[in-house]
Amino acid sequence: MAEILVYVDHVDGAVRKPTLELLTLARRLGEPVAVALGAGAEATAPALAEHGAVKVLTADAPEFAEYLVVPKVDALQAAYEQVSPAAVLVPSSAEGKEVAARLAVRIGSGIITDAVDLEAGDEGPVATQSAFAASFTTKSRVSKGTPVITVKPNSAPVEAAPAAGAVEALAVTFSAQATGTKVTARTPRESTGRPELTEAAIVVSGGRGVNGAENFSVIEALADSLGAAVGASRAAVDAGWYPHSNQVGQTGKSVSPQLYIASGISGAIQHRAGMQTSKTIVAINKDSEAPIFDLVDYGVVGDLFDVVPQLTEEVKTRKG
Image (cartoon, rainbow, N blue to C red; front, side, top):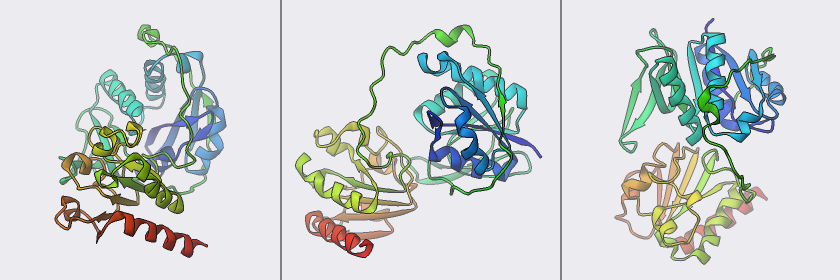
């Protein structure tokens, strides 16, 4: 069976959910071979083996932490040359897409980004994507070289499938470009206790209708009752009501949760581009003509300050 290279996104050995989803997709195409880099790489092996990795290639060197992107591309290229995989899968984060694009250029292959599903085809993996702000769904495959594909979070379930997970050291020779851009400082992101926006199964977002930074507490209360992440529209971010790091949309983050709740968001195309692939969409807006209602699975016409607190209390009641 063909081997599928899976690039591992982890923090000091703790494997992030999008990588476990990639392993589910990789098993549809062949045998997953994981590539874990940096501090804690070997510690990823148990989780990767539990979710189907037949082999875990690991490498650690100061370059992975001290310099941007290129050392990781060097390592992934080394893994590619060692394994000769049928495809390379990478989480569709900002860094992941840069790593994938650079690798594709180096190995002379085509690349598909932001896939939301993968299936085996007669001529290689077939990727499903959302195009033109998710107005169309397309299926495509790479026609030259080994497919390099980045996959959006929440595109597949996390499924346990125990495998050998044999750990092997990956020999990496860093290129001259590897030390071209040095990281001079890092600032840990302040923890809110909520899930990462792009990985969350549920996202609750607020927009212009929230009408002030102080009113986002209503959105946060609903999110916390559901164990959800908090998002914001561009209008809310531009007004200074919520950080840009929480912006959902074409110039913010793209999310694809199981449930997306939009409160006080009109549904401009910029916002829709970042959340239209959500599995279930609920909108709360007092304007019955708001464009968001053309998109949703469930819509509530009403004042969010009446509806959202009631919804929060109902969630708490049912949970407790």
